[in-house]
Image (cartoon, rainbow over all chains, first blue to last red; front, side):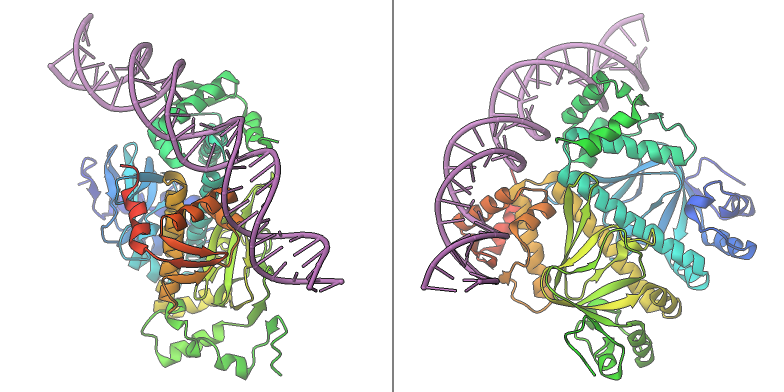
Length: 248
Length: 248
DNA sequence: TCGGCGTGTTGACACAAATCAAACGGCTAC
DNA sequence: GTAGCCGTTTGATTTGTGTCAACACGCCGA
């Protein structure tokens, strides 16, 4: 009955069991202090789950918007394409984070979301979410906070792109990843990059060669140990100093 | 009873009369198709109005978040400050646009909002907005769209900062302003910049000298006529071509 | 096991924008 | 009216990052 190979897992008793109420990412996706009853309601909100393989699109720019997505496991990037072919990665998302809020305004997605590793997401039909957040105040508040957090995050990226130099951008990027991995119970100092140098560069407004050089420089200076996509941070304080200190 | 010089206008019959139901910016701030009854409810949501003089702060980073603000008239900028003193303008806002959504996530504002000319704003207590948007579905949907639009706008700025060259950024900036003025019934081709070259530069991730040079270049090339802060666009198509064509 | 391709590194050079510096112009205040 | 200041323009020079190119590495499939 439960077919792991299928990309859409139908809403059955067995899948429901593994829904929000049992999910260890609950504290990332949902507000605190919900009653049993409310959690049960929210469980029913998550219609289906979907598995995506590496490089598979969750949605594409131009597609109709119907749902937002909570990442259950895996890693994603979102990117925007300009008419003339230029594109930019607008974000990297990991477990417990929400995708698709760009689509709310125009009923159409404005960016692409691509899995950077095999991933699993929860589909949250938006009409259903709105309905429920009219009933459950804590859910409403939580959703507003999630959207607002996205706005604040974007401001941070604008800051990075507008005022920082290449090495500062990369340092900020690594520290941000480290902090997010930590929040998920992983090592703050050692992790695996799911994206290529080119994708990092696109996100940071740099060319891949510049990213590569910055990695090398950080390694020379003893801030990190790089081995392909495996990163070990040796001197977090040093990286942080790069950011705040800057050219005096 | 009605004292225009005071910065806070109390909620009286006379001010209520000039509230949402009578506001000519209604189609920007509110959803279509509300009933008389609903509009009356929303009227009551807008607690007070406030006048701000040029250079006055509407709110500052770190201040507690209680309300969002609809601009009734005037012009604002928002900016973020880094610990090391660097700052960046994250946006310019004009009549009919909403300020303050950055504060929702952390109960605290994360940026400063400053009036760039004498302005008037409507204070929308957030608790009240959430309450009402649990009752009026169209209001809920509208608010979500406004937040989402902000996210999409931010992606556009990231695109600009990450992939465009100086002249492309300025062209995009001018075209965006033109389009927004048009939507408000002003001339698409002639307008007054409320911000300095330095503020434009901060927003576009450029130094003020670069902005100035780009303006001069656009004038030489016959795209625009610049006289201080007064801008006349002579060749919109030319500016647009700068964006899409780019270095072949 | 080997070959090939995608990905990453490193070097030489070019170029766009930053920086430093000076002078100008238009406001505002006296 | 005029002095002074802020904002702007313009020029000369520096510098960080992009560009072009060659090469190295690791992974996958044959």
